[in-house]
Length: 197
Image (cartoon, rainbow, N blue to C red; front, side):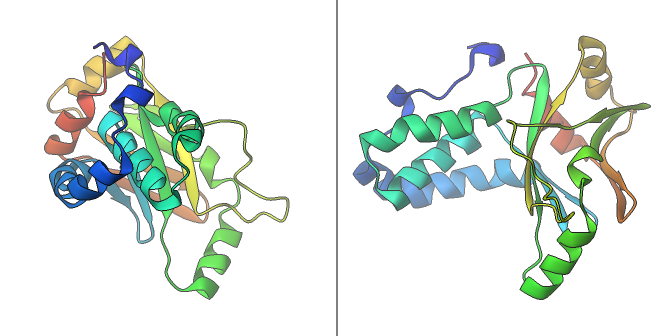
């Protein structure tokens, strides 16, 4: 199926009882993929590049945990299908992960608007993330959310450069309070290139 048509449908969902039996094996099978699709940026931020497989597992988890049955399926599909890459983009859940609640609150208070400063750099070109949906991730008091859902749209030329060995690809933040860059490994680049049509 072309990436541009990739969507999770009710037909892809297995019953909770069946998923509960397969959950551990499915999680184990998904771990190598998730490791390749995680890029740490600085000391407290990680990009988790999503794909059909990670979103299907997330939907199954939500259904199993919340036990909403068939009535919950449509809501989960509506929430997670937009995070399945559509052939000319990479999609990332970006998380600021700080366990200590006091330190977390203080850090997020300094990072207002960070969602507008997160980018993918392909060669010399910076591609800034576009927020998923219309939910504002930074409050009026300047505190940002610890989780951001971002789309990184790529042109055909940028996708070709992304696939070119020897050209550096990285993720970064140019927010004044969180300026960091991280280079993607060849293995991660090869995995993420599968998201392109």
